[in-house]
Length: 171
Image 1: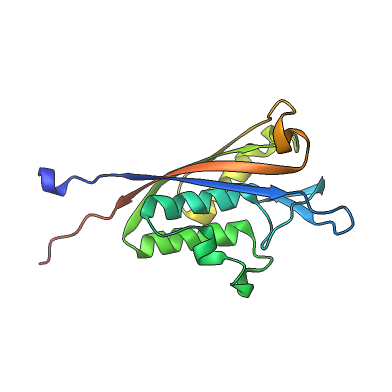
Image 2 (image 1 turned 180 degrees about the horizontal axis):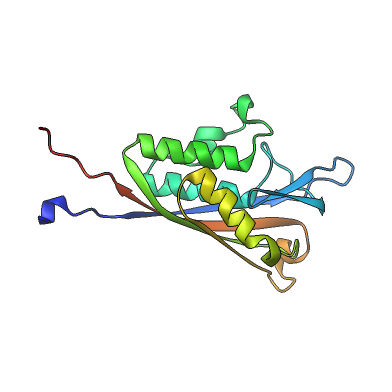
């Protein structure tokens, strides 16, 4: 491959944070593309899934296409209550339409609960299907420090690797 034809990958970072919904206005918990019955849900314009939102933000960052608010912000009422997997799928579509392919997305969220390990594979599959690319998810606690440690909300950080589609020679 000639040096001018080398494909240079681009990386991006996404961060998303949501507070728990007020107890007098409960919401279901959507996390990692999955519904968590019996768990307190998160506040947000859409479903409040910080894992899916951070993944979408990382894609936009890697492709240089703005951020989650640019594409799905509160000024876009059609996205009120939207599933995080819907936003991730649309982010992946936008990134591909801009001439990129997705290498992978990795997400880590910080929360005291729910216990994620038993549903990790299910979450990774749902998110990978939405992005049509490999998505890995890890979870950790903050040892009772900060807002996540106090049980006030959940945060997630993601990285994404994208690369420009090679230009095909015109025949």
